[in-house]
Length: 449
Ligand SMILES: [Mn+2]
Image (tube, rainbow, N blue to C red):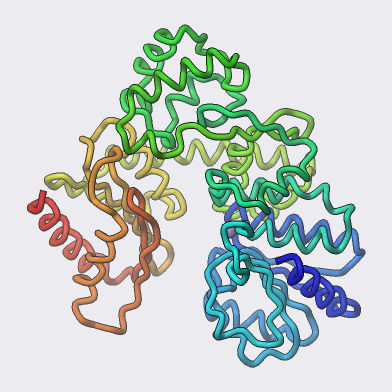
């Protein structure tokens, strides 16, 4: 990987010598931290550049951006590895700093790319988009080592911390203001346990998550004050808490990430949980304030103030969304609930709302929750499982899409996600057809049980 980093960096410095740079980055935490690293790096080089943050890289965006060639140098971060078919007739070199899967056969001499999937040892080299940007930045100058914290935030944003690659370990080593503590992975580790436990969905703690009295019982049992934060616990307290949490979990949950590293970063002169920083960046960007999120990443005080406001708003939006969801008429079946919010809940939070509902004890374990919300002429669909026992939701949605397509190969719907959470995007005018397909498949699913 390092050899490739050296080569791409050399090409990059050569290409940007007398041309402005155009950065196009993804809108999640990893994409925002990628953009922040590139921003700082180019500022330090005293280079002219513009930045665009996108939700996804579609044909329309790409075709427009490519018109900037050859006057500007395009840099894609945390995306574009899956879009190589658009880069077959380039008017000059482009740069991709990414970690998504890639079709090697579509590479050509103009595509300069840093991507761990192109190395022989993915386990060693695996990193996030921000990691790829950091590698380039550090190769440009050792001084940029002070940006390693952004690679760490990107890594946490993309949940790569449970299986740390060598390269991610190096990013951690590079970060002087980062402290790691082993323990129960609950966030934020810097705030009172009482709240952290109640809102804990990962790990999910039966009888505690979403259950105020359950939280108090647990803390009484382990003799820890509710006001203490995880970070303040002694070794003994931490191990008592872990034991009590594990006693409440099923086998499956125990294998999942209950114990691990807590990442604490000295940021704006206070100790912050990196998982919370990541959530804050993500919520700012999702609500349309990606510029604030980038400035916040780079330590801008004003941006921090604004980011905190937006984050507070975001949480309020969640609470009111939750209320709307609770009151709304739902399609209530045996073992499933369909929540068709239309335009009453923002598409960017419908998934989070479903996650919150799924851990609120309103529904029985194993219930499938399907949330739907409008996004212009599309519908965002999010599926969540109550508890940790039940069917594979990604497979379930994929099956539903087959029914929905009904043999029409022109309908193109991609399902993303995993066992307990999955989603997809469809055309708005097919709302009813999709609900019918859902019902059909849900009833079949239930009959199998
Ligand atoms: Mn990423």
